[in-house]
Length: 305
Image (cartoon, helix red, strand yellow):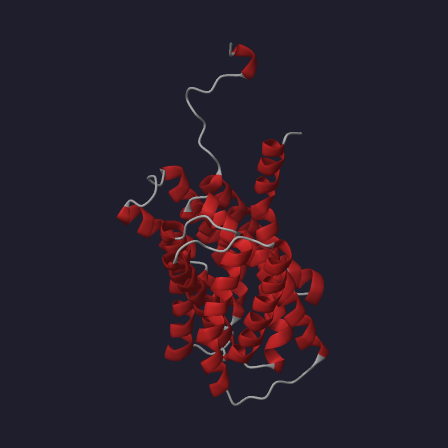
């Protein structure tokens, strides 16, 4: 197998690996949330992630982004995707929003992204097939989280945090696609996480809840740094650079269904028929969004001269 073919095969597995990794974020929250306030946890996560990426960059001598403007663009993306999205979700859940409600609100990202792309014409026109896929994915998402909706207390503050997370992850994805030039994923992530740490640290210092150094908190932190950040964030960065924003965002539909499967395996949570139907609809919807259209001029190999 040639190098280009091997690279294509690896790229095809990126979305699968990303969804599996990103889905563990809610499991990590379940283990870590009772033992630390959200911003303190995220501040430690970002600081340790910066250290890990710094060691990786030094060991591999990865190239740094070229030009001050690219550093600024990467910092903006880091604040939006890491500090804004994670900070909003974790704070909302800590304040009482149910996991299903937060997942449904943040799960509107693919639709919001598609509407923005369609209105601004930043990418190729979204085909009717893709709009159908986005709609099916949203219906599937509702079925997956339906039994969890209404759990927890909803008020203006924590609802605003969920909406902040939604806007942040959507804006971060669109901003990176438009303004960030291709560069080494290791140094790009280091800059993003450093910017997120600078924003989150002052908020963490304002929290009064003490950190309980429980084994589950330690495990959640290790997984967050080594798997979610070094693995998941790196894959997200590469997919945004390589693909259309709408296609990448549609993968977020698959996170709640996969999280439900993980919760069934790890916590013996009930896996209802509605969840299974929702998972199937979501998978079908994402497939309709991300699949490449069949070219009309395509011919079988044996017919080509």
